[in-house]
Length: 39
Length: 532
Image (cartoon, rainbow over all chains, first blue to last red; front, side, top):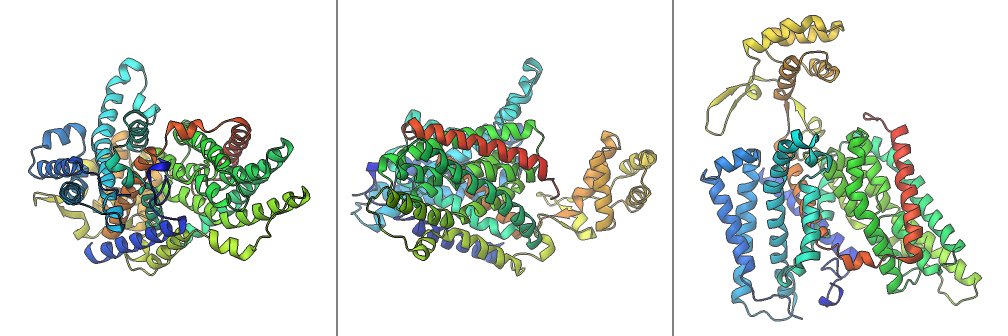
């Protein structure tokens, strides 16, 4: 899939591992907040 | 480049998901759910069906109606279709193929002499990854879904961070000590071994360096992280990724089968998978494939995996220094390494997220401390008298005939403390204390009673054990994030990338990979007990 994307890599839409890690961090804490408030 | 493709498929997928949820809700699929024995999934069928379906319908309308321009909106919204595609495959596998395979396995048992679904470990995790591999290699991932498939690693990392909410201090301390010891030996050992063999076999330093990171630490991510510091060429990275993928995929399917045939427990298998499997994603795959109905094995395996990932900056630093020395010895020009910069730039932030989530949950924000181990003890009348979905009250105290079974079998128990606990259970028709619960569990595990007697004790034990609602939700969400990530991961395992494996890197990678897998198996079987 390498040549099909002009951003990110074949494995991720993010420009680097660090960006992906930060996105995962934000997503996980957003979900934790939802669990805290809604469950 | 514009990523949004004009297609009707996201809309169709959304309608199918919402339609399925509606049919489940209205009871029209009741006979099917009963036949497949998937009634316990009704809650998630409704929630995921409506949420994922609704979002997919909106994305489908965007794909049909919008005239997207190149930019961030187009780039990120176009991922939704791929996410919906992965989720659809996951739904079909988890709610359809998995139970169906279980039924077929049991039905074919008299003819074959064994349950093929159980022996081949055909659960939803294994079949989900296989489905992904088949989709990408046989049918090809549709163009409109390709961008979303690249979110699967994000799903796995989010799952790991959320997993942080489910550990207790004691658990983390015990597992942490063991994992640092095992991972320290096997990560450093395998990096050292690859470097040694690579030098002996006159492989270029860059090839040896990138291969050692991939085989030693956490697979593809480590190879990519180490590549710049050893100035690896694209072809050398491709060789390494091919080797890791080939070896990792084989391990992911073989480890659970070996683990089950050796009768390994959750802790033993988690420790072995977390140490012996090369690639992070495949560690999660093997752990969930070993225990698809729970996440205890995953919890252990991920501690080992996280410990391994924490070694990454150290290994990259080691390789950077090793590479500079080797190149200088060969009198080639090479840039000096800034150690601190390497460590900071390679530190995996998502591991920090895992630790933060663990610290947050340790404050008791999601549930009282004693609720964290998975289940807690509560024998109050409120806990034992529950209402089912139709509002009918269910009394979970032991029935008179169950009490009679216990009285009949009381003499089979030799230990006085266990005998007294069972007498109290029979008298009160429920387990009266947490200490008695431990004793009752001991009797269940010893299999001293008949099948009926053990069933009575198991029921009595289950009705006083409860999972906190927030912790239970975390478990469900984590399982789905990993399912999503692993199905998507399957869609990224292309035969062309595996075919890149070959030559000396494959030979060296395989030798070290096998030594690591077998060595860690022996050590785990010798040193790790189920209770630690």
